[in-house]
Length: 122
Length: 122
Image (tube, rainbow over all chains, first blue to last red; front, top):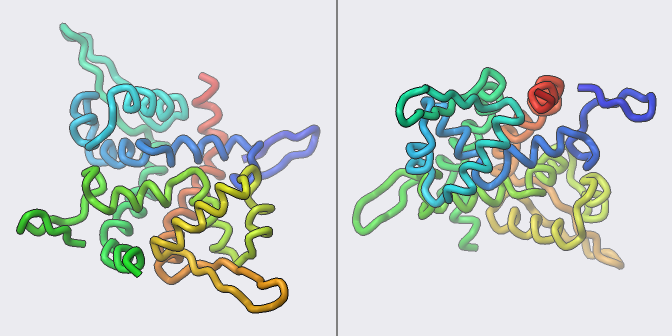
């Protein structure tokens, strides 16, 4: 990506606090976003199902996380006009690409947990 | 990994708030940890160099992030007994494995930023 900076064109750099990529990083690594994305990678889910899947998330934090991920183009929110309306969340193509990296991270943490716990106890 | 739960053996599950893997996820996706790990993936660095590399991090937050990553076994802290002593941080083997997934994530965010910014402006 290119950021225009007073006439100079710069490549995206998450190490720079002024680069828009830094805020995207903050969003997708926020406390709940990783788990929301990983849950939606398995299947599209309604709000209540997402909340049950992600142990410990509050209604407010889940709603806020979904809004941010939707605004960044990673999550689609589809309303089915039933009575009452059903709202389903799913990954966009961009979200699926992003989440591929996150599920690798989660898999690593889960499978290597014994080594991590061993380090913690020393 | 296996968690003993009242006699039952459970696989690690980051979706469960009681699983130790959840706290590891929280540590490695904390506001600064991703950038610390990505910076150390390039080369071992001293505290002051890390702080310059990661735009916006305070001395306190950097120290706290490094302590947590060291306790989880992802970062090594080596003190060279010069006057004054030099402290260098580097990734452990475990940290290198973890960071492989994070650098993929950072690369994705940086290269796909135009699409993310397009989504934000709609």
